[in-house]
Length: 325
Length: 311
Image (cartoon, rainbow over all chains, first blue to last red; front, side, top):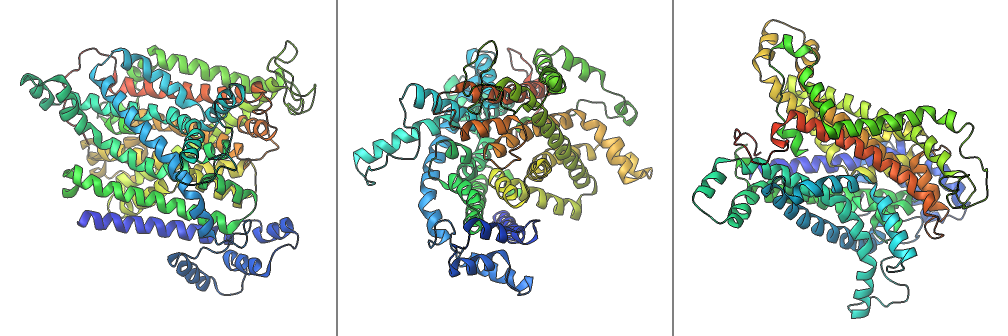
């Protein structure tokens, strides 16, 4: 319990740091975002927008600590201001509409990559020098060396443009009515395959090698030799004895990966124009929509911190040694 | 990262011996096939980057031919939608990409060394504070933070480097701290403390030389991060779009619809170059792991080793 409280305190500090960073950035950065924005919109801004922007960027004349307290209060109450590019929608509403797509894309890719990668790692370590162990790692490291947005471009070109097997952009075809109909769900699935596949392809190598290396260390432990000497079936030793204990670092990676789900698929989303938070963040940056930009960053940070905290709690259950530390 | 933590210091623990370059380490690296292959690829790219102005004199982004030509004897890699020679853009692109990658790599590793050593050496409050800052930076989502920072700062090479170092140092600090901690507890460090050596001297002359292999691994990882992250930032149009680099080549390829018009030769070369450099650096990195961690060497029968591994 003490451990969990300590971690909770740490995550609160981390979240506070990112809120403060968010607050300080527009106020202390060189250049003037406000004049950039006025130039861009050429007087088309509504009075409410100007007001919101002033508040956000600290152009009003109140002392900075007063603005800061105001800012903190707004964050705590979930008031992130009004989006400029999608005026007059509140930032929270814009984000709520996008985050589901990101969770779908990133979550699918993460689960597939983690499960498949860990299984491959277990098998590779179990048969040191076997076919999987010698052939796969170099290939996967090589594939993992490509920037994942570039793999996405290549896949889009090959399967979308040349072969025409896959839709080119967006999460579903325009005109298909959203809802729990077979037509809509299969359309969403068809749009999901290629982006998810490219993320899986790039990340699977890391899962496999991580698992392989921990498994190798675990395999040389005495209790594995003991289990073998007792005459247990190899499959049982491999999964129940070795893999189970080698899983711990993978659990941590999974937590980090959960955080990566929200912020990390960004470039893939951009390539496929997939309407998630990453794609939206780029649009916000290009449209100089500072309130939306900051709201998205805070949402992504909060998601990362939450995911890591959940993994910490899980970790305490899985590994008793953490508690005594 | 797991492998980094598992790594054992292979050097002898006498301070006098530690200061000499470790011959077996260098020898192991040169005779390792992975490392050799990686180093050859890197040398080719460094040579290309240095020779770019000789091979392709003048501004590589000037328009010299018809638009969207397929690869041909005149233009080995074809031309862009604007009519620029793709080969010239790719060769010149290596300059900015390698420069940023190396700068970011060295700077992040340097900060990581400072923070990691100070954390491990002083311990107590300093360690708590530095670890807190490191962990916070480690958790902040990298790419979104990169994008936000790049959006607020004026575009330019300096901004890209600054942003990448700010978001990249924490990982190396954590790895280096854990290694420095284990060396900190060795007898020769205690002896140096008792004999009244200055803190800076102990950190940099006694502890640091014993971390050579892990510092090298961290450096390689940071360079890979720098090259990849720069490409990502520039692909989003957040770098300095007027310079020629692999990331910007990909940005323009996307911007000019190279994918949809079927001009694969515009976006393939820069991506393959990034991958080759990253792959070569990972090969060297894995070789460093293999040379310093006997457990990862290719053996058919797993040996029974000490039970310190599972953490």
